[in-house]
Length: 494
Image (cartoon, rainbow, N blue to C red):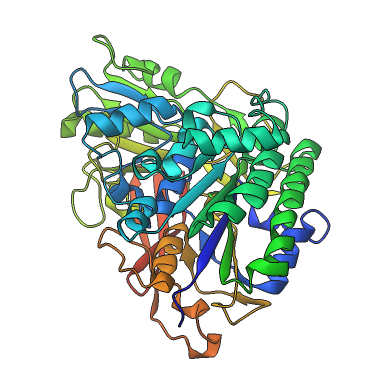
C-alpha cells in the first residue's frame, strides 16, 4: 500500500454517537455513507477530555501517558501541588521542569517529527487541551493554533498570517453561550491557510463543542443541539473540500469524539460526606487536610498518608454512600485492590505514579433524561440537575464517535462491530505511514478497516470482574481484540 497518505482527525468534544442523525448532523451522516462507522468505539477511563485526548495522540491509556485526569495532585514534588491541565502555560513549565516528561509516553507529534513529518493542531478547546494535542509543537517549529487562546498558539508568524486574513483570535465566549466564532475561525484557518500552504502530514481539527454547552444547558437541550448542528456545518466545509480534492490527494479522514455525556440527576457533596465520616477533606493539600478531593465528575482522592489501613478506612466510608459507584485502589493482586470492596486500578488502566489512592465513579443508572437520552448519575458540582456530565464508567460516557473514510479504507458505507477505541487511531495512522509504533502504545492497528471485512479475523474475548463489601457490589466489564483491551462499562448495586 502507498505510504503517501495524509490524515485529518476532526474531533467533536463530548459528542454522543447516538446524536448523529440525518436531521441534526447531515454532514457527519454523509461521512458515514462515504466511510466506515466504528459501531463499538470507546474512550478510556477516566472519560475526561484531558485524559482522552492524550490517549488519542499517544495511542496509550492513562497509566502509560500519565494524564490521569483533567486535574490531579502532583506528589513528585514537596510539598505536593495541585495541577489543573487546562492551563497551557503551566503544562509547558511542567514539561520543561521535567526535561520533557510531561507525558510518560511519546506523542504523535514527537514520533512524526523524528521521521521528518508534521502534525498541525487547530482547536477550540481550553488552552491546556490545545497544548496537549501537540505539547512540543514549538520545539519542532510545527503548527498549533487555538481558536481563542494566544498562549497556546505557535509559530507566531503563522498566527499573524491567519489573523491578517480572518481577523484577530475571537475571545472565548462565556461558558453559558455556545461557541460558534471559534469553530468558524479554525475551519477557515485550516482550509484557506494551513492546508494549502503547509500541507501537514496529520492535522487535528478539534471542535471544542458540544461539550461546554452540554455542561451548562443539558446534553439534549436546544442550545446544545444548535451548536452540534453548527459544528457539523463547519465540518461539512471540510468534507466538501475532502470529497472535491482531498480524497484523491490521499487524505484519509477520521471523525471522533473524546467521550459521551450522561445527565446529572442528584447533587451530592463528597467533601461533606467524608467530613461526616471523620476525615478532614480539602480540595488542595495543606497541613490540616488528610484527604484531597480533586474537583470533577471522576472521583480522585489523595490521602496525606496512603498506608493500606487508611485506604481501607476511606473505602469503607465511600462504599456506605448511595452515590458511590465503581471504586478502585492500587493492586493487591490481578483483580482486587488493597482495600476490601475495591477493584485493582490496573483493570481500568489507572496505575500511574500520579494516580489517586482511591479512584471512583459516581453511581450511574439507565434513567431517561428530559430530552429522551439514556443515562443518569449522581454528581458533585455547583450546577443544577439536568445538565451533562462525564468522566465515569457508564457505557454512554465511554461511547465515542468513530468514523473513518478514505482510499485506504475499502468498506465504504459499512459499519464495523469489532470493538475499537481512541488509542487505536495513532497506531493505525503510523501503520499507514510505514512508521513503527513505540512499545508504549496500548492501542492496535485497525486492520479490519484496511481490508474487506470478511477477510478480518481476530480473537475477541470478554471478561467481567466483581467485588463486594457488605451490601456494596461492583461489576466491571472489558473486551479484548487481539492485544488491545477496551472497558465496556462499570456498574454497582446495593
